[in-house]
Length: 615
Image (cartoon, rainbow, N blue to C red; front, side, top):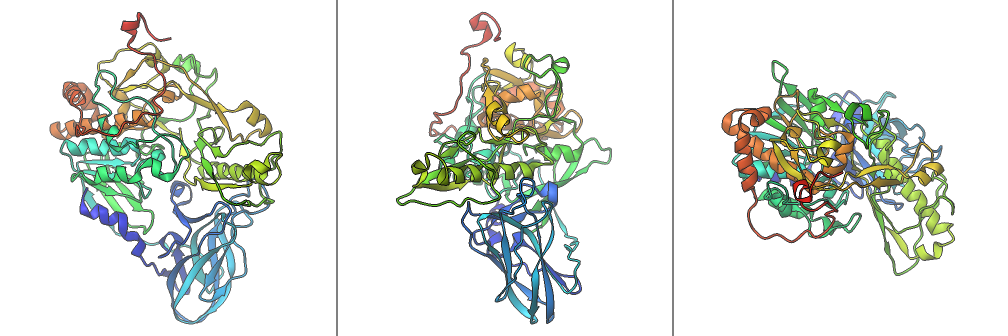
């Protein structure tokens, strides 16, 4: 990994941002505060509200103040505003995450994070200031996820974020991988080991996506099966040795992933960098560059390359580039799939906000609050850990409503736990337990699916249809999630628990043509956003499988470089070269700790060996 990318990973803590002066107005983006305290940077919703923001994620305990210093341009009375929202407004009139602003020694009187559920400017109060340097602080009052995007000090009453025109730094690469989950990380490593100069662009401070300590979903599926058993070697190198969802942070081995990437001199890693726009070629057929914005300091980089990979999960790059995609469930009539619904709809699998608790030496408290959802013995969920099936948003849009979806996941976790601790018949069982972790980065399963030259279907997998471009093997059952009926009955329109159906099949080699866009000529994809139907997504979406997709995409990118072709050309003109690489693999060959967990069940052998196709 390049030295400049290591600097990109570590330097932000030293950034001092003193605001942008517009007359008698000073505006500070909170993600640029020099000391975050107990507040965390939330960058999941940039596409919705335009920015990262600070979140007071204390799980019911007020977090340490976030602070920075500002230069007050002139003495006078300043109205101080916060750009904020009341996140519980969709469900109750009572706010959960309230906080105050402190300027110098003055704590302003108004509680923020109240009122409207929209992002808006809210008056914190008025303060008399001298010219010169002073401290600005966010003072959390509840620990329940108050949020602030910006602070504006103005002598007027019309606060606004200044429009700052930033210079864009140009960087040229052979291959740009957007998204640093398991799929993207494997794609970058695979291509780098085959000689490409690779940019790996990730919008969080760590790699791994859902398998990071921020989300805590374990890897699933088999590796090293199918016609190319060396596929999966890279996943073995970066995957944790321990399994389990919603477990201690160390189980997910964030540093292991970073170390493997750091060992590759051909990879430049850009953490905390989100792709926010795409530039097309003059004829509009391909991507010329993607623009990445640092989610902390706002700096911009133009990443230019002959080929790109969208490994973002939400297909952010593809959507910006105008790639064809689907979202929701196709009908039986359209796909011929037995497991498809009779009528197409917009339902998707949901996002999980997982959590777990720990045992304490003494009894601990957790507050009942008026903004919480009301639970009782009939509808509560007994337990000490929220696993994958604490799943929200299946009936909502996983793109445009994602902040609400994530917030509802936190709301039900807090509300249910408060009932168990304070009012349930079994509250004595919970007296010495407290939250140890509640995710604020939601683990999403499904949103946009980019369309390639082949769209994988249930029939492909179950009938074991052979294709000349067979590649990575998908082994997980067709695992589809639905709202839990009993939970839906108790919470119509807003279920938060799920069930799943599993249908086993043979280890099926998926066509390479599912891994590139059919209408954006130089765009690969790997991860849950590849070219599949909703039903077929049920098998390919687990992370050992998506990692193998990434390995194949990295190999194909190297063929594009070597032959001056694009992704489709690998299939039409250089498929034999891809087969050679898939047979050989790109692993180091060094022994790795075994991943003896969550492989799932599959039918052994092949249809030929078992006398017919899987049904």
